[in-house]
Amino acid sequence: RWEGEAEIDYVFKVVVVGDSAVGKTQLLARFTRDEFALDSKSTIGVEFQTRTLTLHRKRVKAQIWDTAGQERYRAVTSAYYRGALGAMVVYDVTRRATFEHVARWVEELRAHADGSTVVALIGNKADMPAARREVEADEAARLAEEQGLFFSEASALTGDNVERAFLTLLEEVFAVVS
Ligand code: GDP
Image (cartoon, rainbow, N blue to C red; front, side, top):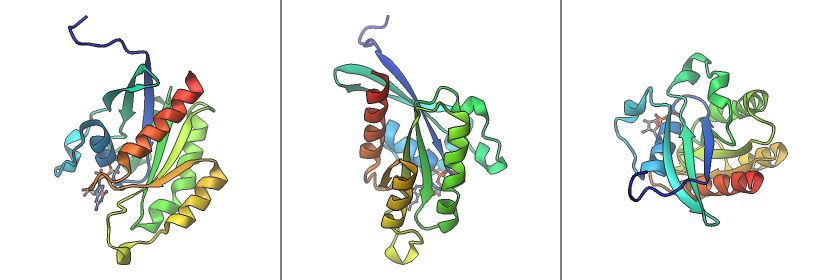
């Protein structure tokens, strides 16, 4: 083994789903590399990014999967969901249609992923001016409650709540698997 390489206790696969252009790729870039890539589709074709962290003294490798644009063609395959312990369903707070499709994404997850997959609902682009907003946080919180999901608004652009949302999800996955 390479010097400095720590033992990994767990690998958690987490999938990110939601309509096109809600900010999935940017959320993933923010969490795994703490960056917001201006040429946003530079990661196309890359299946996942990883970040290794310590949770309860265990080394956890979070393997965060990006649809890499598959959702445009409604062709997110079951291989994408397979083995996912956690999932993020993302909508854009400035585009109501992306919120209206959340239920469909949750259904798709429930159909393909394992029954015990922990799911978070994320309202991204919370940095946008209030006048641009088409979905209020309390409405999304109600939907999340009905569906039994953890909910947070976030901004991949500013980084607000991104770390916390992923860490909360990974903590919940940890509680399920450990
Ligand atoms: P994806 O198709 O869901 O992966 O979406 P992308 O990550 O490619 O983002 C789509 C567009 O939204 C790009 O122009 C991003 O720069 C922009 N974007 C992503 N996240 C945010 C955010 O938190 N705030 C704002 N204002 N724009 C964002």
